[in-house]
Image (cartoon, rainbow, N blue to C red):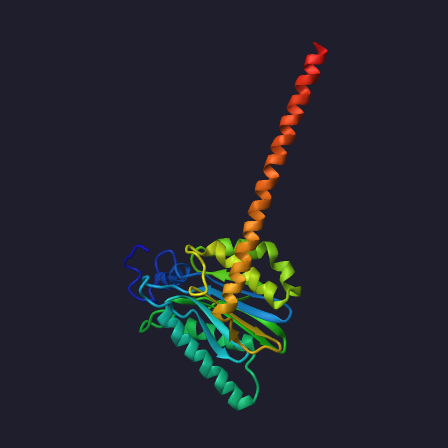
Length: 271
């Protein structure tokens, strides 16, 4: 974004009433790699594309475990994401020590949003340039929350953040009503299909990461071998769909040609 005299610190409002430093932080989220969160009646799932600086570099971590019943996906500045991930782990550990129970997902999201909001009101520090998708399960069931650098948060049935996330949101919007009754394998397939629309590179087990948490399933990341199996099934189903469409097209063309020939025969008979 274009710099101006009103973006030197986070407490300076522009004449239009805007805080440019906060907007810059939210732009950082939009330029991060895409992340997806969705849930069913029994599971909450996170999926993300792992970025890499070059072909010789390793892939950055995008999913972080907070507790046995909760995890986060991040889009934006990874350094800020690691700070917030450590904060969530500390809060979950403190809650478990004091109350001897798992921390409710909504309570942690509120504390995360309050922490982010503080840095939009103090001149000494900048806002966190990272957005989070929080997936967790508590007594109320599975949850998917999104947090913003501005301190806002929302709960969703399914959501995608990051660059090119509109394509993923379009897919999720068309299919989210069927997610509630999905089994875990079906839910993973939906996540990968939605993520494929936002990915600028060929998806592989190396650059894709998926994590699942359920009512009876502690937080775990899907292994590369399992991801390779899911991606192969998706590729095969897409090839079959493309082949079916190719086979249907000549039949339509043939029907049109036959109808044209019949019309010509009728005209000859009339003559």
